[in-house]
Length: 252
Picture 1 (cartoon, one colour):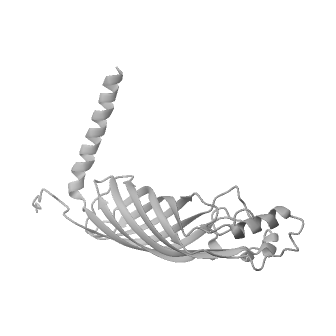
Picture 2 (tube, rainbow, N blue to C red; picture 1 turned 60 degrees about the vertical axis):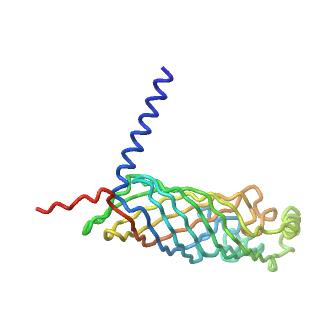
Picture 3 (cartoon, rainbow, N blue to C red; picture 1 turned 90 degrees about the vertical axis):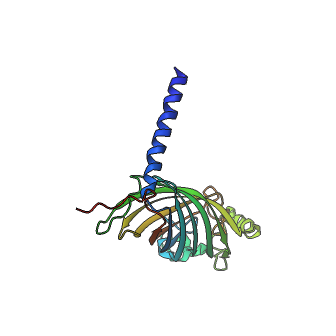
């Protein structure tokens, strides 16, 4: 019985892959994209769990995609932007004005992602706007040049809080990373404008294994890692053979 079930699951997988692969003859093999948007820091220097929207920084990306079939694609992406966080931009809680940490860093990110089209990728047709949502995930590496600043820290205000004073001394001795690996995960939608051109809108959240993206940890919140996310809008150009069978167009 177990062998039969395993065989049935295998047959279902092969059948599904065959159907998806057969549809790949109707979609372009390759896509390139240009994207513009913003980088948003999430970490110790903002009280907003969703990120530091008041210090958002612009960014751009270029992407190259290989469509495997109508459901899956492999995408390589290069992003360039920057991140910034600043305690002084917040009045609540008031102690942020006295702590007054800030940081900034340029970000150059390289990523390789697997894209999953939720409804399957439908070839664009002239005069028809096609809607296609998708999710994606992968692995990325970001090159950083972190500049942190604690020069406006009010030692007298935190004189009774030795954990913060000692934590700052520990942070100062800790080297900031020059690069970090992350796991980017995200959701996007695309609209077909013409047969070869599409508009995309997507958000990407990055899971990091560091609390020193902003240069501070022990003097802030050492129990929670830093993160960042991006919001991007772009144009995607599709090319490559759309129909391997080269079927003639039947006109009425």
